[in-house]
Image (cartoon, rainbow, N blue to C red; front, side):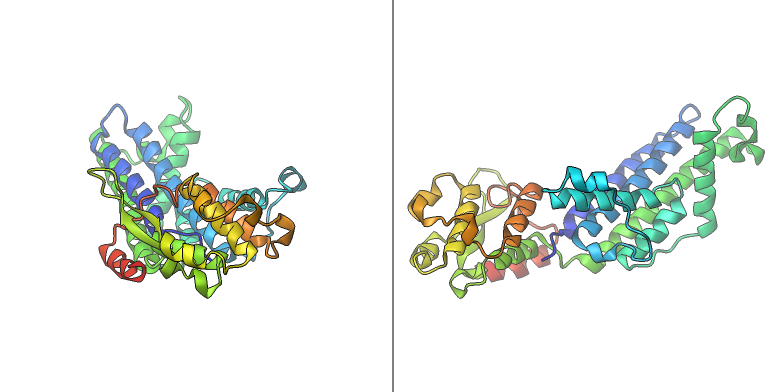
Length: 317
């Protein structure tokens, strides 16, 4: 299964875009260099975050032409936490592209996401040069040689150029967000929930459509949809399912309510771990719960994309 929600990634990008736009509106003669560096950092961070997000769900997108960077210390320190090893591997891949080059990180993002963005290569290279000179050559002995000064521009023109470059970066991020939404929009919260359930339970008695549904949160004035269980159906089939299915069902119930299990299982019904044949499911459960601890107890399952919400609602209702 893919533990990936497109809406989360797009929301993170939109947050960065909005922050960059606010920066652009506040640029003046006293802060243009600092805000330029900050905008570039947000641009770079947004792309790195997106790459990190998708590599976590699509590890096959890691560049196979490169040697994977992972130290023996990383392995030894996390021998019993394979997900930490995987996250370390992804972080090492991120560091290879996060080097102060806007062009390099955009090209890498295009490769990983399998999309094509429209941008001026020369313009991105010029922005990176300015960023690096401000960052690394901002001393009295080097200031006169900076590219934005060597063009003999008036201070007013320099500030306007700074504003335009900042907007240019936000426009690239905006196009990136739109392309991602178009290509990966099928990866919704509902899709992840259903795939997670179907991975844990392959019995026809515990079909996702029969066991869980989405409901409006009970709290007043709430606009959230949350996961609910069809307890009547589960009660009817609970004596006919395997011990391993009882095990996973019980730990899912425990995330929903600490008292629900008492209605379905005695403690003696829960099998020993040695009897669980597919140990990978245990790692999967732990991984999903680390990322989404409230998936079965309060996580908002309402999607921004109303069409997707209607489509997936019909499955659960």
